[in-house]
Image (cartoon, rainbow, N blue to C red; front, side, top):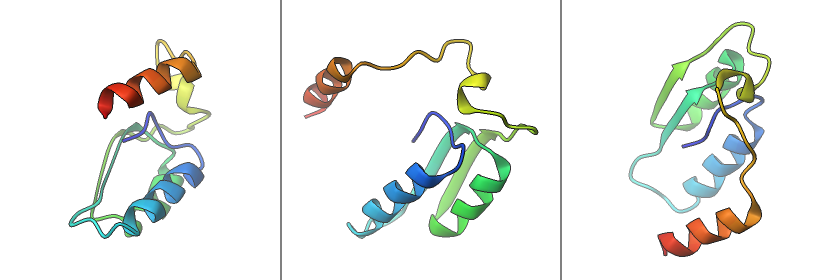
Length: 83
């Protein structure tokens, strides 16, 4: 899951990394995406879920009321808690 897909480059890298682990099923799930980018990614996954493909797209952050950056410390905390 991602906060959204603009170009799709980051999601494609994630999909490739996950496929190398041979998952039983790979589901792409995002709240918002550029339609063209989403369409390029769909053949790479088993299922795709996207709530909104606005046109024109502009940027992921435009479709959120709050889109603050997440600090490195917060990411590390969440990763530690997940383990």
